[in-house]
Image 1 (cartoon, rainbow, N blue to C red):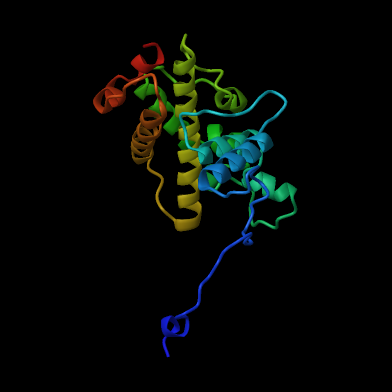
Image 2 (image 1 turned 45 degrees about the vertical axis):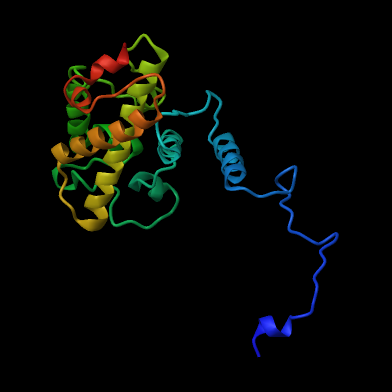
Length: 223
């Protein structure tokens, strides 16, 4: 017998019915928007340090958290894994392993490795900033190297540096775990595409043009 036939003649009256209540909301109602807001508060309270938050609204949250992990030395480079007792066959840089005895530290991974240095050089040339000479990862990630007089311009340049570091790490992992060849021109292309996609969508005060972004992006640091 069908359920609908079994229920014929019954009248359901709902008075003072039980319901689920979400304790995190004052009205007990769960919504995705409320959950997202609470998650943001918890995550960014966690990534606050004594100097301030490493936040940049022009980028996705995953890049902000990535930048915080780098500056806090929470990245699984070989020197850090070795400090934590992980048994490794070598602590040398997996990219320039054949050319020397460079230990893969945070600084080496993101700045001093010759392959990474080439990416920084390409990004600096793309933005018309000349040779890459800044060797302080702390200064880079905190946005202290921006040649801009506007707050928005400084945020844009900081965003570019964070995206550059992110793709250095991504390409390093592709080389280590998947055996993919390191190609700086391809890495630069990825940085140009994703930074434009992320920044142009989130920047409220500027309009971005793709051809200008490729050929003369430094105009966005001052205009």
